[in-house]
Amino acid sequence: MKRSEINQKISEAKEFFDEMKFILPPWGLWRLEEWQQNREHCNEIIENGLGWDLTDFGSGDFDATGLLLFTLRNGNISKDHKTYAEKIMIVEEDQVTPMHFHWSKMEDIINRGGGNLMIQLYPSNESEEFADHEFKVTLDGIINTFQPGDVARLTPGESISLNQGLYHKFYGETGMGKVLVGEVSAVNDDNTDNRFHTEVGRFPDIEENEPPVHLLVGDYVTFI
Image (cartoon, helix red, strand yellow):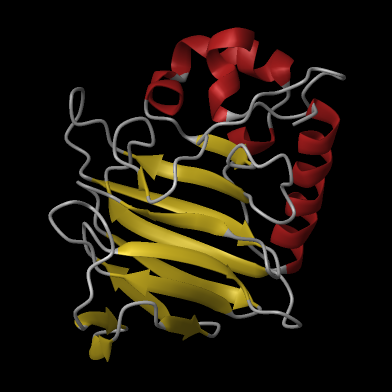
């Protein structure tokens, strides 16, 4: 992805956060010089992967296959006692986050407002392929029975609990607008805990055609 495209997507995300009255922590709006001024106080942010994250999953088409998220808090099992994480995400209409599961992380996905979030679900088997049996998933504390490939539809305020090993793919429902999506989970590790059904790239290759307005998680090592 071009840095100019990333900058534009982050600008649009800030506008949507404002519209939805979701306020980021102050450091979420820092420019490069502020990161450099405050570097010695930001170890938890940098080491635990907090902040802006945007990817096209190697597709080359962010609008069709991509995700923008901001990690608000996250533990680091090797360094601290925090056992939880929280993210806020923006999912556009028909913008797909590819089918994947997590080996370690259990998570709740919450529609915080905007349009409707569609989540396609498959159980996995011992070979980490799609299983063909029905399965149960909890939506807002209520047990629901699904068949492989069924799609859960989350309207604003609704949530779903995703156990380890449960494949899920999500996207915004056509014609309903972009979705503000929350995630509350166990500690998040995007380097080792994502099992995509079809291999994708988790972090983007960036063409630096202009300076970053706000740093991505993957930029910390390079810029500060």
